[in-house]
Image 1: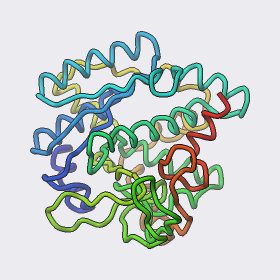
Image 2 (image 1 turned 60 degrees about the vertical axis):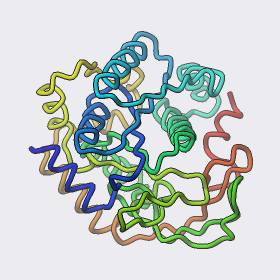
Image 3 (image 1 turned 90 degrees about the vertical axis):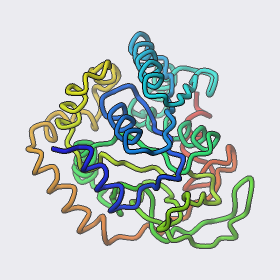
Length: 310
């Protein structure tokens, strides 16, 4: 597969970004985010790396050193967020406490915290979009996992640009009130999307302090990303997160997605997009969190809910 060509095709077809956008790439240190950073830089986008030091021992230290060196070689600015300075603890402590108090799995906790930190810091950096390294395997996994758990509606609007359509905005942000107006936005239902930007001007930031998340590798199988990274001889770790075990998400990937052919993964994702994902509207209200001011479905966002328990 021509991954670079597929990225160009996905960016253009789904209007993910334009050359005048400031593009912040969420870096984990793995093959996916490293590859997408390299490709977008090569294509001429204004990219800036953003990495969270999760304090996962040697694994985190190696990734941090690798990404620091990689970004220097590409002449890409890199911002590393120290999680302990940001929330007072490393991710392992937070997950251990919440597993005991709330019964939340490690992947759920990590996802909530990372989304909150990435959105906050991408906004600080003046980002128009946040790029993540989610690939076709990740998306197929989400579809199948939600289906098996009876949560199909969570994938409404599944697309390379996360967001919803005609979301009802309640109240305003700390900087400007939205007046309860509706914004025309693109993408899926996982989060509030950004205003449509069909021209070549930088994407307009909305009033809820949300930076649009986009996934240029959405249609690229994980095996192809790994092959690309290996062919490019990226000096990175290919090991998965040391905490990625014993959760429903990980199990679904292990016994189902990894045994599927790449063409079948594509059928799962595209089929879902054409049916549930492409038809259902997300009419849930979104607002600013009363505690931290970040975008939230309720009066208090998920991040503040879990942090209060630690």
